[in-house]
Length: 143
Image 1 (cartoon, rainbow, N blue to C red):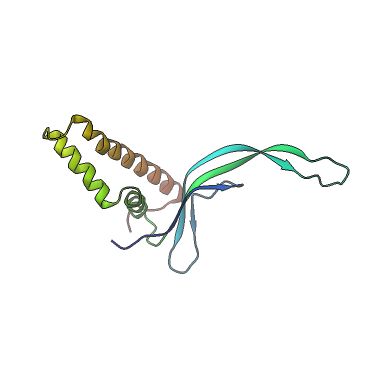
Image 2: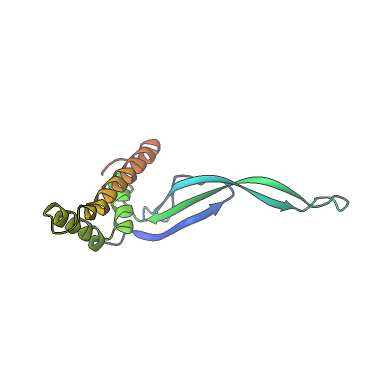
C-alpha cells in the first residue's frame, strides 16, 4: 500500500478551533484532516498594554487535536483506511484476529478475544467520526 500519510501530529494545541478538513493547495490534492478536537481552558499571564497597569491572569480557551496531513484522493474511505492503518498496522490487526480465532477454538483463554473486540469498536468509532466529518464537508465515500 502506498504511504498516504505525509505527516501525523497528535495532541497539537491551538489558540483557535482548527478547521476539520482543509486543502493544502499544493497542486497535488493534499489536505489536512484535524480530528479528536477537544477544548480546554488555561490560565495565562497577560502583560498590560499600559505601563501603569499590573500583569494579571486570564482564562483562555484552547483546542487540543490530532492533525493528519494526507495525499489525494480526498474521500471517506481513504481517510478511514489511513487512520486505521496508522493505528493498527497489518501485523497488529492480524495478531488480534489470530488471538480471537484461537480463543474461539479454546486454544487461548476467552479473554484473548477482548483485543479484537476493542479493535472492532474502535474501527466503528473511527468510521462514524470520519463519515460525520466528511458529510459536513461534502466529501464523497469514493471517487
